[in-house]
Picture (spheres, rainbow over the protein chains, first blue to last red):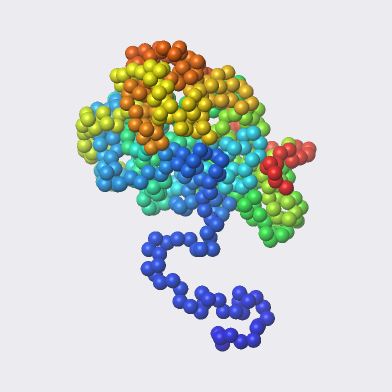
Length: 396
Length: 201
């Protein structure tokens, strides 16, 4: 009998008929473009109001604590713009290559689709990710300490094919990549990098780029800081020297303790973080079996090993990696154990394929001071308390 | 002649051909390049003809820039200060302005032209941009009030922190330190919490 009757013993989620069992579901035409369950409405990008002057030159953060695997869903990829998210008409999209080339060229989107394509998965990390933690702990959640990152499978044309088409002159050593938005974002990129692995991408995770990620075309600069991945890409100029533009001199440069500044700090150092448990993902089930989950990545290669400590770094064990291991892509790790309910100091430590081991924040501060803003890849500590709550701390 | 013609043929079909241009795209017209090729470099490449004085610049700046950057380029809210801060780069709270931090004046010309005459900003002529820069140099105590900036004298202006930048040296200063066998057990004798999120429990 499926009609109401006397209350049965047991879990009402089982013994009582639920509306999704009784009634027809939503018609197939309800969501031509599918959306997450309404029960997942909390899984969204979030902004920190005081961080930027307004909502146009601004950034929001990927909800890492809610995600698993290595791929970031398109609608949850953090967004950074310097003049808002441009809405570019693809019919009016043009990509120009000029400067020290034999033939300055203009491509339409349809032209780009006639070159051989590649599919590659890369992380994009903003150089400022974890930058608010240079002076000490500040942000109460992995979304805010580490959420300026996403990992996407890109479909695009190797930039070298387009450069071959234009014919780079012998004197050409640098590229200027430029966006078509109201910031006309511009960054200098050494030619060797462009020839090595840069892509001119038009798809992310199989579908068109989202507007906030540079629709219809963005540059992909694997392993290097996100600001160089110019969105709404309109132009590549070939030159013999770097341009020293604003976002590679006054910004995205690293002020050291001695008052001097590193420039062109392109590569993202190896880094990892436990995404759960974390302040936004407390342990609600009490003691017993507990899954620790996290992410690791390196701008210089892949991640063969991640270590986990439960005691703030006295003893370490190797985490279990699960899922694809690509160069310059996020890696997913797990560590499963029986939690006895005692407070823990959780950390993860990444090793990359060059042998580099993720340093502590204090080791970085000793070398750089606390005013470098960018490239903070230090080890993160979460304090898991007996009641299951988690706080952001630093340890001796 | 290959001894393995069938294999060679298969490879030719399997791999994208990139050595020969595909003949895609079209040649960019000079007017099109002129419309988009707006970038300026420290050696002056890309600067248009023009000039502007400190006095003209003060007027333009107050009209077009001061709402975000302040009458004296001191910054409003979280919009950046463009003047002051000289000698603060080793301080606990360094002030990074055009005068105290930026290495090249060309960066300011380029940025104002590409990003501050659209979107956030107001349209400005080439002469007005030279004038704004003259005023910003004056606001940073780098020129006198009768100074006139032009394409001709542009590269003779050197900002105080030009020599303060150096190429990323992590490969020499950091990678050797952080490339090592990692300690796995008894790595410390004890551990204490040294910092918490402000106002947390």
